[in-house]
Image 1: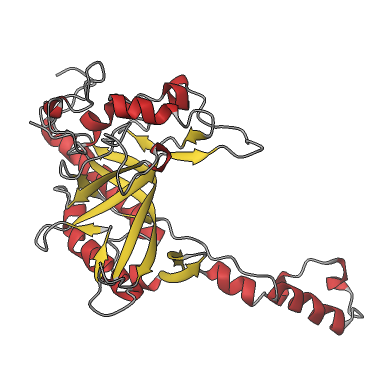
Image 2 (image 1 turned 90 degrees about the vertical axis):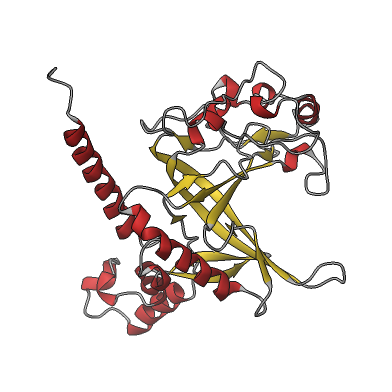
Length: 335
């Protein structure tokens, strides 16, 4: 056996240890949905026009109730220091507005081929009631229960914690809850999204994505509708490049999203927001949720042969299997 090769049993043991290490770090984070103590670490807070999941941590308590022993002012060693001055200092600290810390929620899921719109143009095929301008384009995908331990055993807790989050924010009992927990009751999936563009500010700061293909004029859209759409925002918007990483920790090129994400086991990191909509006569009252991606980290790449169809960007459509399909929003489907 070559010195650098490993037997299947050795490789399996190494992978198991690796997964346990990832699992240990997740359990320590306090915001892993598979943690039974997750509910004690987060809460919903009104921020702006929506509700967001925020962290409950010791920093908030420390800011509201400063530790007198941590005083490092020059007068702290002077026994004649004014008590009134000390009280004024404490009051000033207590009156500082405490900014909620948005929770960076995470889970481990296996990306589904269903509802897969995580392509460079998000399957855009012209404006509609949801996307009236190309600048509003949102990429999305959903993930189901993983097949590897210990994450497989955690998934029922993931679903339980998600249901708890939704129940805690629901505007009314029995309202429909949309946008995050999708799929049938026996096979729940988590849906996450990424808004692809942002308006260029008047005074643009340094742009961290200097790769040529990450610039808006070179973003690899495919079909005619997407080419026309992106051309209208060349000067007004820039790409918010998705932070999607392969198993080596390198950014995945947008041309490879289909082939490298579908059926992969990943750790998505995201923030969760909620809006409540009242009944308007046409639609019933509903609660809408948005899981906005911070990053996707690959734990296991797709099995060989699982994504036989490649995202062929030299042809008319990123999903070759649907190249001649009907003129509606398309998704990549593995053969």
